[in-house]
Length: 186
Image (cartoon, rainbow, N blue to C red; front, top):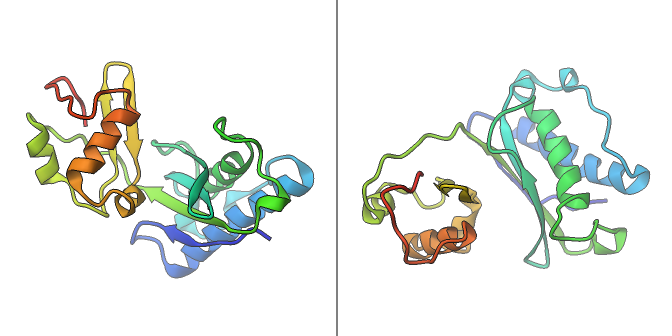
């Protein structure tokens, strides 16, 4: 049985809908361990809110360390289908890790983030960006040319300071931590 920790979902979802997403992600991983494939799913069997096209990420942590994180930044399919696929992919297809094994279930935590549509921020300076950010609420996609870094809102838990948050995000995008350009898109 895959332990479930939390669903960091939007306030538009009810507690029941959040619980259904967590149960679905758990079933997806369990089914993947047993059958080696994605759990067959008909989103029509879920509440209307979970049938809407929404983007999600599923993050797996084991003993507080990252064990897998896969998701979509754009809504491409019903939320239930997105969580099902992302849970399976986080467990078995994250290229940074070997596929999850039953021996790793102890200490495993799962977090689901349901994303709202990205809204571009027009900022001229890094200070202006820091001033607009809402720690614990905003996720950030930072782009410069072909470089991109993305942090979900949950990253604020480990990087609560806006300066550190942005420095690490820039490094994730392959940029120096103190770099800024008016060509950066946020």
